[in-house]
Image (cartoon, rainbow, N blue to C red; front, side, top):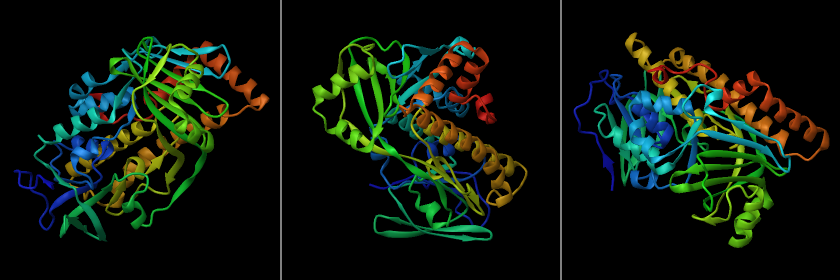
Length: 414
């Protein structure tokens, strides 16, 4: 079934164009951008390869930062999302068998919470429902982008819907189609980065004891492990290990896996039960050489990917979407061409540098802690002690992790 909302009364765009911008990719980053443009006066089409019901069905959970919550609140979708996710008010950071634990609390920031954990379904479903009421946004899905032709004044997009081919004319294309972005590749934008020696095993578990709305990050010689609180006293485990070890963990007998997991969590959650299948995926760091070209902008994983330590990946994409929406709306209000590279560079200058800082931070954490070399062990445990007892350092690290460092988009200030 093809979902087409192409007949609603929507704002008129410039003569000769079907839409002002086409967003390729209707997952969370793309849907956030479309939602942020609700009252922009821009006519938007979301092109998604999967039916909406399939796109929301991904079994994944995310750490959502304080800034991401403020962005969703500014958009007007937070009231739909918040009741379906977990608010956490404590972070416990520890290193292998070291007895010292760094604890973060809302009082360290002067906020009501430290972050949120939400599964893919309620977040994307809430955005889809919000977009259903956006008269300026149309969906075209499932649909495949076959060809993109960039011209001085616009973009021609050839789209395959079932067995039919259609031509769309738009002023701007936004690539939100993931780390293997075909839009980025076809535009000749190169990337830099590397694949880590590690993979991640993810699973949902049911602990015997209450998680007490606490997010756990425990570093181990082989890689970091995050345990994130979910509704109904469930937890999402993100366990990083070298490829062979991670594969063995995924295939390990369930009882043996849970026994090892109880040891790795220090027994703080009691006996554990699996509540989902174990999934395995490799880890990489990637930064696009550029986020924009004439008539093209990249957001989310199409622009960058980072190590999952600290749960920063999706939050970077949400900030990309909010920043690009702001740049486009300001350009529209000034009567500027939203596809002009001079306009798009404002977005790139804003986000590329901030994202690079997060990429470097997560890479440093992984390399520093996934290591049993004694001098590094001594240094990092001294660092943990300093993080616990030197308040300015603690606050700085916490502001970085929660998205409160850097330039906030206007949506987050409402």
